[in-house]
Image (tube, rainbow, N blue to C red; front, side, top):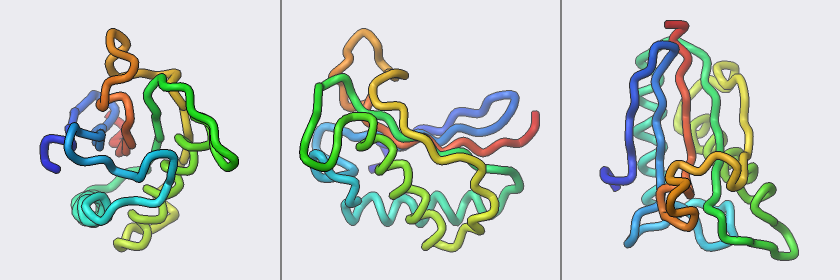
Length: 132
């Protein structure tokens, strides 16, 4: 799972990106129910974030595969997964008042636009605002 978590320090904060990798998906296909490995990772992320001040934004992203079921399309799926990440962080002890925003972006902000179906495009991004 460590390969699936990337941390990027920017002038205005820290971005934690949790992505699918080839042999591990964060969620079942077409679902916002997290797999056990993701729950454990989010517990560690919450613990780390609790050591730092700042407001938090949580964003969900899908790849560009067209998806539609009775419950979801890519917009709803990305939003539901972002909300799932929110609940995991709060359950792991993060103060919910720190959460500034929970959003879904579907496939509108691909991490790898050259490969719109790449695993890295399916991700949860947690941004800690430090005010830079």
